[in-house]
Length: 517
Image (cartoon, rainbow, N blue to C red):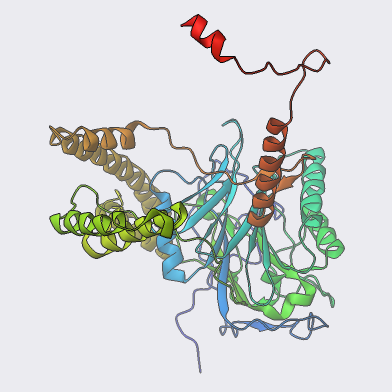
């Protein structure tokens, strides 16, 4: 079949449009010059998507078949400002992504929280706002533990079936960084990688700010479908993969160039492949496809990179949260039935029932009667982002797909302005709601607390007795048991401050008490 209406202009393999630009310009370099956006459509027939030249590699022993395909992605979001979380979650739903690693969050501190959409965000940022770093994950379930190393490296461990999965998200220094910082970065990720259990399926993803290019000879690390020419940072990344038996998934599958580049310079003058998804060689057979999704947009100059893997995540079993009832609306039937059952319990002879048995009966009575008559208290979370803002974000996505950089830049400012307006309207609605709570101080205080309290994320990582960081929930529970046991044992022991044994005084005599009073 003849292919028609194909544009002849394109950006070839990470090279630039103009002769004064160098092909080694990568990462976060920002050119002040403006130019007309170019198209990345190639000529000729469309290659077959998903064709790999290394299908035979990585099928060595210990290759465990994992059946259910899932999508694992990485995205440099260029700041997760207010309102962008909802936009990113919307893209995750549209692209059916279960695990998303993000770079450049620009958040401070470390911790985790649950979004209004039900996803868990786990992140690791900087202690101060001097440098724009930060990495994190957005996942649905199956989290065993995580290790927030610093603002550039973070690991996540998920419960899989039949083996567990460890994912590492990184954000490498840019080309402006000195070599000493690059060496320190690779030493840090190597130490973190060595601490991951060897039996786990390992996935490494993130923004490496390096050009790996394509392999001109047979290689089990880099395939023949990379983009551009390898640079010095790419050589260091190649050595890192060789030491740790990693294969770079972006280079294994044949795709159109628009599905390969992951970053574009200002003015769309340069397009390079600097974000990667890697797996260990023995798990190469789990990779089904790796490509970018240009239709996804969050206002970043990076593309969403998605890998399709054959995995099966296992739901992590945990204790169910307690049921909370609406105690403000207790019906009369509940009080009557509880009163009647309590009267029957009081008639039981004390010799026939121990206090523990009586307590169990009382507890079951209250619980069963509440379940029968009292409604559960449901916390309704309404996202404060308006539909108008989401429509502007969709228009920005359409402008990106059309290649209209001026319109996309204008819409990007309108989205930021609309998000601030939505936040202001949300606060005004809450204030009006608080004014209507006259006579109900509890509800008014709850709204006031919601608006004024300082948001603090939950942090689960602790250190053991030797100062080693514990990242998994089971190890953390054991450490708390150990700490509590030692604490109470120390309280039971008698402490002598002067090194001498103090004898306890005998109890007072009756005559002494009578004489005193």
